[in-house]
Image 1 (cartoon, rainbow, N blue to C red):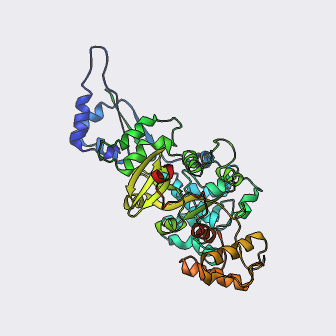
Image 2: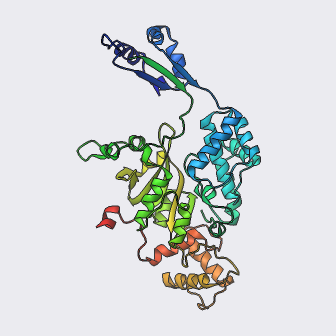
Image 3: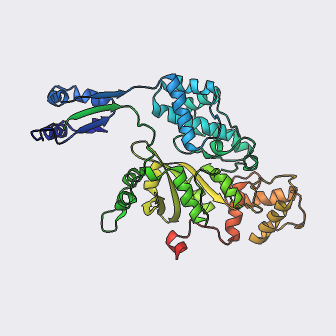
Length: 432
C-alpha cells in the first residue's frame, strides 16, 4: 500500500537512502503498492526519490493462459482432486476479469457458489458469466440461492482463494458427496503491483503471532492479527484446529477433511449464513475472513459470548467483538456435526429406515407437541412431515417439511448429545 504514503514520508524514505559506509549502502528499500504509486512517484516534488530507484517492476494483468494456470493453482492449493472449471469457463473468466487477479478471485468465488447451489461438480461458461453479472451488481446476490430456496433451503460455499471445500475435496464417485445434501440455509526499489501473488508456503514462527496477543500489550486489531498469522491461517491449519476441538487428529496430506470426518462418524456442513444461524446450530465453525489487504484467512470460531466471540487464529485463542468479525466475514463457514447414524441424509416424505425412527423419537423427546402417533414406524409419512414443519416453525428454520442437515443439527443440540462441542461453552470452560 505504498501509494498511500504522504509525500513528506517518502521524502524521509529518500533521506534514509543516504545512510552508507565507504563500501556500501546500509539500506535497501522496496516500495510495493497499487498502480497509483507510479503516478505518485511521477510528481515533480518527488523527482529526487524517483531518480534513486534502480529497479521497477509492474505486475500487469494476466494473459488468458496465465489466468487458466492461476485458477488451476488456487484450486490445487485448496485441495482440488479434479478439474473444476472447464476450458470455456477459464476463458470466460479471463474475458470478464481482463486478467486482473482480484476480479478473477471474486468471479470464480461466485461461480463456485453457483455450482454448489446446483449440486454440480463443474463450473461452465454460463456459471462464470452469471457470476460476473452478480459481481458487477447486475444480479442480486440472492439470485444464486433461489433454486435451492424452493428445493432444499440455504446452501453455503467458500472462496476460491482458500476453500471451496465441498466441490474441490470430493473425489468423483465419493459416496459422501451424494449423501451430503445442503439444506435450509539503501537503494529504493519500487515495485507497483495490481494484485498479491499466491500465498507463500513458509511458516512464520509462532512467536510472531503470539506477540499480537500479549496480555501486557494493548489488544491488537483483528486485521493485524490476521496479517501477522497469515502463514498459519490456511484451510489445513483451521481443519486441524477444528478436529482437535472434536478430539480428533487431522492428517495433512491424507484424505480430504470431510472424508476423515466421515471416518469418525461426523459430517461437514458448508453454508453462507449469519450469526443467528451459527448461534442456533451451536457448533464450532471455520470462518473465512478477509483482511484489509484482500487476503483470505481460515480461522476457527470456538465460542460466542454475547457481543464477543472467541477465535483461534493460527492456533492462538483471541477474543474480538462480533461487529469487528462481521466486517471481515462474508458469511462463509464450515462446521462438523454428528449425524444420527454416521451418514448425513435429508429425510423427507416416503423416506425409510432407522433414521426416520430416530427422527420420530427425537422430536417426541424434545416437546410433547411433536410426539408421533406411530412412533415405531420407519416410514416418513404425512403426519411426520407436519411434525417436522411444526418443529421448523417453532425454531425459525426454513419450513419445508424436510429434516435436512440444519434441522437435524438443531435437534441434536436440543437433545444435548454428549461429547458435542458447543459455541455456547467457551474454550476455557471446555479445557477445564
